[in-house]
Image (cartoon, rainbow, N blue to C red):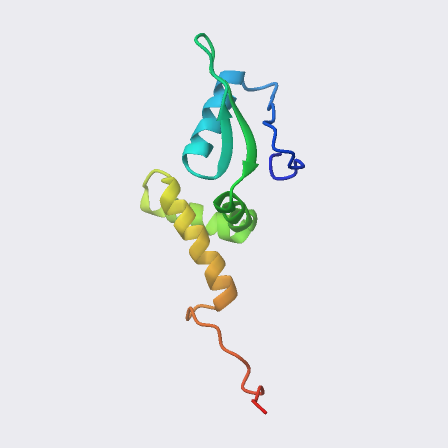
Length: 119
């Protein structure tokens, strides 16, 4: 949703029929605290309202790494196999590691073709 919204510098209102506004605001606040989005705190004395504005660079990187079903399922299975709770920083590190492997290969280094030569 936020990823597809046009950027105009204004906070977005997020509504969902299955989730109350305070629950949504809480998760927006957590995403802001994690550095994945920039959000405004518009809370008052009797209500909580966090409104997202845009995805941060880290947010874009995390989404790109998590969009790949193979990487996502591989990362989730690591937690399931070990029987540990899903910890965000570890999940993020695993996803980024798998994305790096997809680009650099299993050895972690990029090799140019041997057919390239310098003039």
